[in-house]
Each structure stands twice: as C-alpha cells, then as structure tokens.
View 1 (cartoon, rainbow, N blue to C red):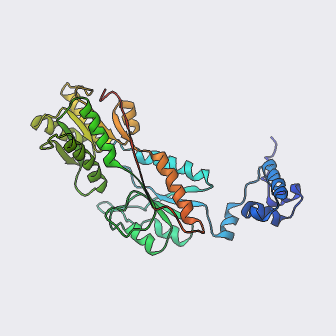
View 2 (view 1 turned 120 degrees about the horizontal axis):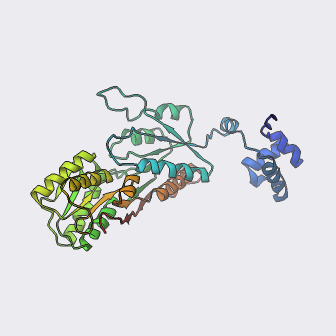
View 3 (view 1 turned 90 degrees about the horizontal axis):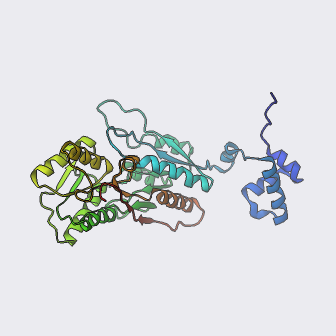
Length: 343
C-alpha cells in the first residue's frame, strides 16, 4: 500500500508559485496587497496543491477562530418538534458558505430536580476565545444569556425577538408566528368552518402567545366567536390528545389549529380513537412542518429556517466586520404546507 501524500504546506505553495512565504500569506489574508497577476499565480498554486491554511496558526495570529458557538438544549421527550435539527443543519451550511463553522456545545450536566444553568457552557468558550461569536436561541425578556453576553460585549445574534426589551441592541432574526397561525386559521375558515379550536401552550411562552394572537386575530376579523374554543396545555402528544377530547365533548369544534405539530398529532390520536377522520370536513393544522408532519400528511405552518440561518450568518458577518453593523431586526414570513389533514 502506498503511503498517503502529506498535506501541502505554505512553503510548498511558495515554491510552486515562485514567491516568498509572506506573499502566500498575504494572498490568503490580505489579497488586496498583491498585484492581480501575483495573486492569480499564488491562487493557482493553492488550487493545484490542494493547500488548506492552518486554522490553528491563523487563530493564534489573528485571534479569530472562524467558529460560531451554538448551545444545544436537551430534546424534549414525546414531542414531534424537529425544528431545531433542521435549523442547525441550515446554520452549518450557511456558515460554511462564508468560511465559518458551527461549534455545538451543551450547558453541562444537570442534576435531577434542578434547572439547567442558563449560562452553562458560554463562559469557558468566551474567556478562551474559542469562538468568534454566538447564536442564541432563547430570547425571552431578561434572559441571562443575552444580558451577560451584552454586558461582556461578546458578539452574538439571536434567533428570536427580544420580547418586551426595547433597549436590546443585538441583531436578531425571527419568524412571524402570528402571521403563520392567522394564515392557518383563514385556511380552515375558507373550508367553511366557523368553530375553529386553538390548542396552545401554557402561559409564559411569548412564542406561544404570539401564535395564539394569530388565531384570535383571524377569528375576530371573520366575525367568529372564540368562546370555549381554546386550550392551553404542555407541549406533548398526550396533552394535545386530552385537550382535543375535552373540546370535542364541550364545544364540538369542527376544526383545529395548533401551536405545534406535537399538539396536532395529539388531536389526530383523539380523532382516530373516536372513529373520526381529519380532512376538509374536520381539518387539523400544526406548526413547524416537522418530519412527523410530512410523514403523517399533516397540514402545518412551515418556518423558513434556511432563510433564518442565512440572515443570522449575514448579521454575524456584519457584526464582526470592522465597520459599524447595519442590521438589527428581521421578521420573516412563514408559509402553509397543505396536506391531507385539511384537503
């Protein structure tokens, strides 16, 4: 078996291009300093040798790791929420396009009965300059992560609005959940339904409240009553199943719009148990357009997570540039993926 060819070095590139090592370094880090013909010759040598700059050395020299930190939270059992998986993949691809990589980290172990440390994992990475910036996904008012990163002047962007925080200055990108749910409710209304139930989350979630507002707004705009047609429960399949059963027994809705695919799957379980079938006569709509929704044929509000990732990385690049950042807040519109549970 032949020995594998060792990776090309900066000296190899310099020798092939007939230039100094410093010229190769300038071609990589400061290309504007070189004449076009010299830059082209060096680039040709880099491509021909398959040379990859030593990232560790570059980090020591520039104090830039080209890494973006993203903390992963534990997956919730018995849910259909796969939005974070799709978002992470989109973020990795968007970062790669501009020469960055995403470093995933956890908040550390959590003892039984204790809440996770909201700052777990951030401090070590920030103090060691292991990452250039962070992407934060928890954006509730007073979130200690956002507050602490801002206090330390650590660069970060957020997936989510800084709810009720008028002085927040960090860039953020979010999806208009209220608009998505309003579109879902209008879709069910267009099918001829007036008793449209809302299955939402328990109080305390600003995202949940925002989504509920879309249902309420659409119902009021259509002149429809909302009395007795909503439930606020935990985001689990079983909670959705039980809530749907209670609503069917008490107010007999003819359609369901849900804050998540998880709750919508719970509704589908209840309908099946009662010998009912979701469709145009009894539509069910979820939120997130998870893989579960796609497999089960569930109509669902789809978040433009790929676009979110691109905008976040663009905001990060803008934030890390030597010029004054120009981006602040971006609100994107979702779409409605219509499937068998409403057609």
